[in-house]
Length: 378
Ligand SMILES: [Zn+2]
Image (tube, rainbow, N blue to C red; front, top):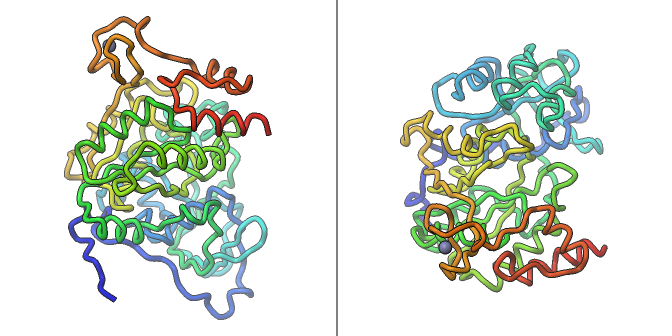
């Protein structure tokens, strides 16, 4: 078998792709056991696959402190959000088994440190608010009081929700290389793709070799459109409106943190590990409610020198169909008044779909609308 060199692609964050998968160690059943939340399981799986390179385990105190204060790991490498494992009490042993909520053993963790952390400070620094109504803050406040740090070795990967879409960074990198891509743009989404986002992915695709549509399928808020419905929307849209040899649809297995600006940087770094040289950052990326300013998720990238991130953010405005332009456009490219723009609020779109009505073609492709209407019916 010939191997295809992936060295034309952007290097993983920190230089090399981490692999923390391994054999199931003898005696693992007799180890003290820590049960992970679903969010911690998704972090664990991303550690296993190298999606969080250069991290090899849950963060120790030095990394944690500097990430919270300065968005850098202890060695100075840019890193935007804590990746930590919260526990109720310090374990007795120095090697632990990690299990999911169903009791399945997934990994071993070699304990390096157990430390206290300040939830309010983490909330204030990472979420820019201490308001418990913020879903990320609420999750943080509800978790155990200590962080447990250490390298992980994962011997049982959680079964992916969408097996056909589950691709580790090593695999997307291989696919990109096989297709001869060098410059690849990543697109994060947790919503169905309507015309506005179709437009900006295609504007980005005009300038690079390939597009990774990388929807988040981990935990989201309960009022977000369910992942299975969204995945079906992506399938019908890509099948009808994108050139198949220029696009790859794959799932981003992370849980949503709703950390707005910091999460935008974190999302960009993760996609760099998947092989993306560019990353689309829209307005209010990874935001929730009105905790973040419209452009905060774009402005935060100015905190770093371009070479420190490697992956290049591409900033976009909201886009719309303009009747006078006769095309998709945005405030950056269209001089016409708002009356000329086909705009529907999220509430209006939900009303239409719930009533079984297809929104205007200028707003959403009818194939996508039909999937959503069907989901509303059931
Ligand atoms: Zn116009």
